[in-house]
Length: 290
Length: 267
Image (cartoon, rainbow over all chains, first blue to last red; front, side, top):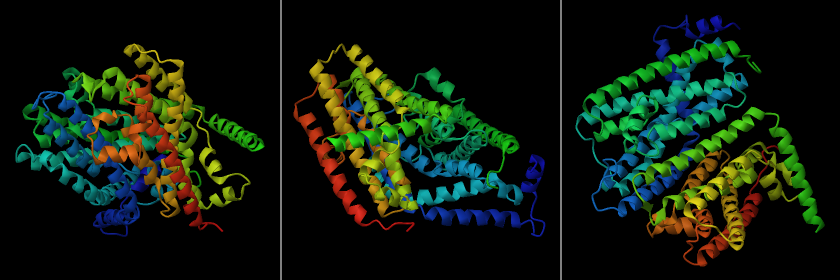
């Protein structure tokens, strides 16, 4: 199969169907994804519950640090309560947006030659994977809600509302963009399977940078200012640090709008890179077993 | 004695086989070392950021915590080298019914499951952990005596045994739930708390559970404290040895119980 025919096939609408077929097609993928991931619900529950163990440990660590300082003191403009609420919100945003099995499945699709069928069907692979990611997140979030809500209840004194009512509007927008960005990064890294034998090393290397620079480990504004400013130019802070900062009202004024612009730019850039890597990858693709 | 030499011979053959297998993918082999090194660097970076804002955490100075993170890395990487791949593979053995084949071998099945694949690359990462331990000791101005180094080896083995027994126990759950990848992931989260100072956890349920049920707060803390010469009492290392034995017995009992529930997938 030549790449050009592959591309034209995957973007052609179904001739026999009305235009509405495009939506029902992906709605079908979405419901299929929901059914498939429901199988993993016990796994998800286990994962979400175990995920709270290191979170609890991190909170204890911070409490121990604050305990040695005079009461009410701030570390990098965070009081203990603010620090705890930062981590609680990171947990929530992470549950909503994190990539679970998607990257491994994409890599497996390429390795097993399962991608071939998408080149023959009027189904765009990126849109297909996005639907599966969204349905996976839907199930994961609903399952994770049980242990996370339980945990939040115990930490409720630290759980603060958004700094202003704008937070209720802006945070969902930034979380949605964070989810798109998260998906596109994972998707693109998984596409490296077109070239390398085992993509898991690249997934873990990417994830290591993400873990640090997204603000998962600690809020980025406790870093030296120049380093913090530098990181804001990379895509990573827009996965966790930015949505949480918007909610907590830590990012305001010009920084807020600049942040939204950069988040949007990164989403678009990640989309274009994903498309580019896909089309280059198809040239390499040999359809094993296809 | 012939039993021991027989198993040593089997293990040597397995290591040789793993090595040949590994060398087929040289770039990948090196990349895994890079991945592990990167995550180790991340842990050290986190501690550096924390100590940028404080001089001590729960009575632990900066270099004492670096020593702890180094000890934890050393033990964790040895655990990876010997067991992690094998234990996370158990659910696949059960799902595909490949376990039948292993059950029929004239060798202890638990032994075979546990050590089948030897991850040679993790030696490099274990040595990085050890290098950090030496560096932190130099910064602290401590020179442990030979007896203390011997004690260090003993408590590291005990810590390794705790990790091994607990993960083996968790992996046995896949005799009931067939899809059990979550188990491996779950264990990674437990790992994560082992590198933190136990004193940072308030006395209460959390600390008690992770000392006396899942003794994560002993496995790396005790070796680090031993080298830093800050063990409060010999009870601390006695507790680790006791828990290591208890975990091993528990895992063996659960393994035997699980095997009775095994219904082969293929036969």
